[in-house]
Image (tube, rainbow, N blue to C red; front, side):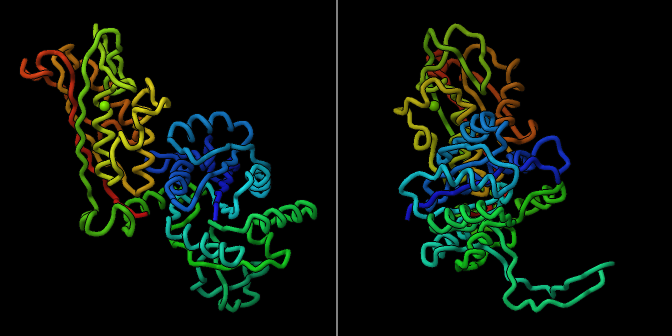
Length: 403
Ligand code: MG
C-alpha cells in the first residue's frame, strides 16, 4: 500500500535553550532533522515525505535541509502550526491522491530504524492504526501534592508510546477533522484515533528511538551513535568486530581550455579546467566514491548519473553533502579522509588547507579529520603530460550502526 510519511518539525526549540530550534542542531555534525529524514528517505516502504516546519523557515529548510542533502522523497515543505497537532493537520491537507497509509514520525527521533518503520507500517496495513512503543518495565507510581504517592499503578498493559505511528489514510484524516471540530488536543496522533473509538495496535519500538529535546539528549544521542551495533547494511561480518570500515575511491578527468579548475570545492587559477558533466571536481569525486564504497552504497555514478541534467555543472561539494546523508542514513560516521591529487600544473600547495576545510564542512566533521595532499606524476604518462588529473582517496567509517 502506498505510504507517505509526515514529519512535524514545527517546534521552535524552547526546551533546548539554544538559538537554533532543536531539530536543526547538529548531532555529530549532521542536523538531527537530516538524520531523521535520511532514515525515511532510505526506507523502501516510504514513497514520499511531507515536512512541516515553522512558516518563517520553509524556504531555507527546502534549500539547506532538503535539497542540500538530496532528500528527494520530501515532495513538499509546508508551514507548521502553533502546536505539533496543527503541523500534522496542515500536512494532512497536502496528502496527494493515491496514498493509502499515512505514517507520522517526530522530527527529533533520528534513531528510528527501518525495522521499526516496517513493523508499524505492516501493523497499520492490517489493523488500520499502529504505534511504536515500549512496554513499561518499571513500577509506576502516581504522586499527588508534595510528591506523595497516591497509588501504585498496575503496569500490566502499559506502554510508552513513540513514533512512528501509522494509519489508514481515512482513519487519520477523520480523527483530525473531529479533533479540530471539538478543539481536542493530544500529545500523539494515535490518541485522536482512540478518542473516536478506533483500535490502535501497539508494536515494539526501539529503546534507542529517543527524542532529542534537551542538550543532555544531544550528548546521549552521540553516545547512541557511537555504540550502535548492527543489524543493518553496515553490520555483522561485513562490518567486522571493530565496526570500522574502509573505503577507497579513484577518479580522473581530462584537462581542457575554457573550463574552470575546481578541486576540493576551490576554484584554482589556471588556464585549463577539468572536463565533465558536473564541475568535474576530481578530488571530491574520489572522496564520494570512497565514502559510498565504505558504506556499501554503490558509487557516485549510480547516485548521480551523468545523463541527468540535474547534475549538469553542479558543484560537486553539494553531491558530497548528499553522500554524507546517505552514509549517515546507513549508520556510518566519518572517522577520517585521506586523499591525494595527482596533477602536473599548477602548484596546489597554497589551496590544500582550504580544500580540506570545504570537504570537512560538507561532511560535518572537524577539519583535522580531512587530509588533502598533492603531487605531480613526474612527467610520466597522460597525467604527467599535463593532459588530465587524477585523485585517490581513502576513508574510514566508524560506528557502523545499523539500519
Ligand atoms: Mg569524476
